[in-house]
Length: 357
Image (spheres, helix red, strand yellow):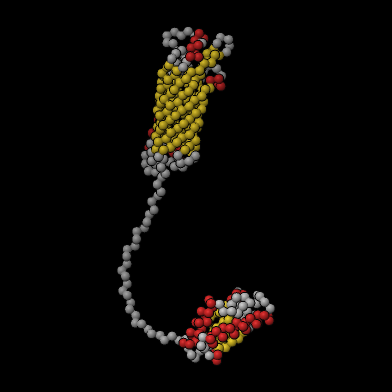
């Protein structure tokens, strides 16, 4: 027993030193609810001395490794006494045990603190008191207990005894604040606990499962983003004043593609703007002429039909230019059907191309 607590004390010391400088961790409270089974060591088969057990703990995690908790556990204990007929007489009684535990998180101790670690094993050791009561079944067969000189170990009413505790557990992370808890522990209780005198303290082991709830467990703050310093402002360069150069524009050429719908030669409103630009260029440059070239796409229609469409398209555009006030002598019309397709897509080849030179 002394060796167990010496090991725990050594681990606590090492853990305190290892976690003293951990800036990512913030202390938090936790609550544990556990239930399971207990076995009180006695003089009969192991399974016959198993009884229900439950526990409630409230604790605080001071560092990634070190925590403490106030634990209250209890429910039922069992004992056995030989009945003189080669069998054992079983009896039940109740108890409640409270104490203070010191806990050490083994994962944080040996692998460092990690907020979202899935498995967090721990060990603990503690000291407290055990109050046993409701021992009526043992007293009902008190004649079976051997005569005892001196102190009487068979108690009635209630019995308060000292207790030492040690154990190991595992928290399995379910979320940031809830973990599935598995724990095995043992209590070393005063020798009166099971109403029988022995050479050592009574010994009770427990296997428990439950949930651990954490309150105020904070995620580590993200690493600060280092922003490089802004470069020093540079002086503005002196403005360069340039003398304006007047250049008389020289008209060279103007091309506008008047597009048509498949199998049509009507000028749409959106295409009329292009004809207006051609007319404006002709008026601004009286020495220029315009060549209107009609086309049809080879992907649709027959060669005869396409030749007709290209003719109508060039003629209708030429007529629109004349209607805008341009002499017929300045307009050259031509059409190619589908023998020439100047563009890559069929839609672009349903066109009358106006070239002003």
